[in-house]
Length: 585
Ligand code: ARG
Image 1: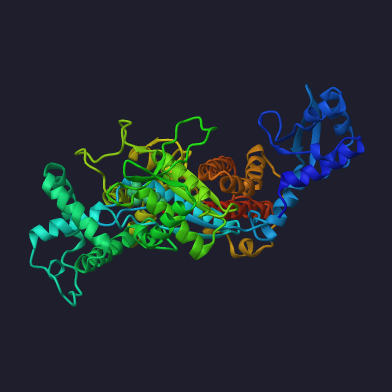
Image 2: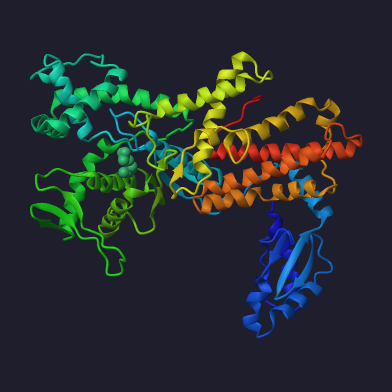
């Protein structure tokens, strides 16, 4: 369906034309001053320059030519605004049509892109912690939104599966069980079973990491193990496979619980085979130079406001780095998928790293000029004290523990509700907890830091996920109680009978814009702000209106139709944000 503001703009542009002005000035948008009017057009202000006329004179002439407009009333006000209100009958027929067709919806892009979104980024063998939570939550939502509007999108987890953490685990295992076949020469076949469980793995890494900090020899050993693994030592490769199996199975469980799904489970290790070609290319093109034994590429530009250091490709000992892997990953992605865009959803503190990587990729022609490389950096999730989120004991909070905590909190609240059957309570608690965590994050502008406030996020009131779910459940329970005849009646929306009802109807027309701006600006928080406003409108309407008790059948059915539209808009929105609503709560 065409956006309401576009329909109004079309009618308004006819009036601009009739009055002798360029119709392109007839842009209509939701009003900045809802106390004065619902929509506005500032075109007369811009036209004033071209026509050397007072804006109010132009606005007056345009308004005088709007007599026949079916969709709005308009008033010209000083210094030259066109204040507009939608005609109630038009609004009613617009929503009737919406209800009779596909319901609240959004446009599809005219030129779909192939987009790879790099998000998640957990490190194999290390526990996933809250730092990875934001990437998963924001990335999943951006992926769902970009897909919904018609793009082809591939979400890639880009596992950290090739670094020192693997060397540390190998070293610790070697100290504990030197007799394992992985450490012997000439072994043909390795056992099918991993020599550790995921719980053991969760303990091995931190132990090894702590030892390496204190014991220089141990650290050297771990570095050597990492080197040998990367050089292809068979026993280590086999052991790495086991670490991957155990770790990835656990990661899948964690992401499943978050309702986060990747199309590609590739990682840093997959990019390694592209490194030699990248280095060859950089040397051939004369882009790389030696600096104290290290191979570096200059990426600074005279226009830079901040100094950008050269990108180190190889250390003096020949080892590749995080940047090398990311450049090679671009090459890999171009060869395998040839995307129109690669979008990285990573902590904003890695911004400089990506700027360097992007510039090397561009300079060397590893990425073709039409392919966009974008970085959506996010801020830190802080605890109530304003410092990075920690456990009560001050350690790194594991993602699993955080989710368990929130789920328990929700279960307590939900069990008190007799509408929820005991056997559903656990599933419902999981759903509501997820909404608390995800909405708590997504309702903030991604680039900003935010405070994770359990008390606030789990509340059924205020700007929270549970409040949105509660609103949906409220609508569901009304719809469950309606009569069969009401349920089957053809959808028809009547002119609003109250201010609250009109406000709700207007809010419904804004769904498509909310989705589009969250897509274009990589801003799920705009969709959150929209559903919060829509839920508030719904609840104000609900409190002031007898819905099922309304005796006039046409009016009652009109109310029910509105409720169904709101429910669809909310459900589609939360799906784009990455969570879902229960039946009862
Ligand atoms: N594994 C990295 C970390 O934990 C995040 C990976 C982000 N993606 C990338 N292409 N570098 O910090």
